[in-house]
Amino acid sequence: MALIDEAKFFVKAGDGGNGSVSFRREKFVPKGGPDGGDGGDGGSVVIEASTRLLSLIDFKYRTHFLAENGTSGQGKKMYGRKGKDHTLQVPVGSIIRDAETGEMLADLVREGDRFVAAAGGTGGRGNVHFASSRNRTPRQAEKGRPGEERWLRVELRLLADVGLIGLPNSGKSTLLTRLSAARPKVAAYPFTTLEPHLGVLRLDEHRNCIIADIPGLIEGAHRGAGLGHKFLRHVERTKVLLHLIDGSAAPEAALDDYTVLVNELRCYDPALLDRQRLVVLNKIDLLPDLDKLQELQTVFNTGETEVVAVSALTGEGIDELIRSLVRLLKEPPAGHDEEASPDLLAEEGTP
Image 1 (cartoon, rainbow, N blue to C red):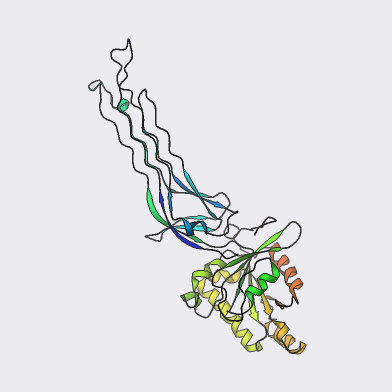
Image 2 (cartoon, rainbow, N blue to C red; image 1 turned 90 degrees about the vertical axis):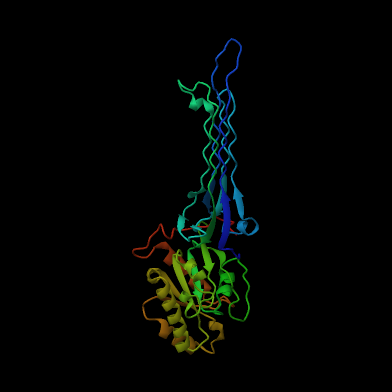
């Protein structure tokens, strides 16, 4: 599925209710005194992470989110009702920033993580609080305080088990359709994929694997070239990085493509090279004979990473690829931070 991974939106918490100016007037109570109640607090805008969402599509059609105001106090010391909170749900892996300063306010990496984006205003005090020995009939009460309001920006960094990375037209989208039920656009020209796509691979009857197809990178992507680092951030929280290489090219050219990918990851974040990585030589159905495939595998079999040869078009080698993924997903690499990249297992039926 295609996803929207950035959005800007406005939040406004509810205003506090005003305090009441009221005096007790009852039969046989000649000097009842003040009895104005306090205003209710305004509701807050709360952002909550949910695994049921995989995209920020909701923010495409709505950009303003308001919580309910508190109601004013009344006589007989009746307090105003508190305004209802407004809860926004975002996908797990969302980062909340101040839209003006860019400051990171929250990183919601677990199901149920919550962040108060705008706190509700407090209710004003009624005149009962201002009574004293010198002022027995206070005719003053506080107004409720306004709730917080601001523009925020939410940025989604995918939490996936496997991230597909490769140069344009290396066959990532075709491989995603082979491994899952996802149907991204597939065409014989570069930059077919202009936004990340997610797919779910069934590993066994109990486990599924979330795969993220990251749009094609080019040399200089860490500096913003091509689709730039806008999509490189999505590989930060994947457990396994799958380097997809066009195996139909000459061995030297294929190795150069791999070098470009590794250098871009190193320049963007050197820690990415410590992740579990798998080199997948794609399009082997285009090789003229078995000798060419063996020559290609010899170039890549350096012992640094595991190498698997497949054809995403015909399905050749896909079973071996899945077995390799199962093995890599079982054990995180040494020093891997589980909190930064939690193991997301999609439940059956995940789109």
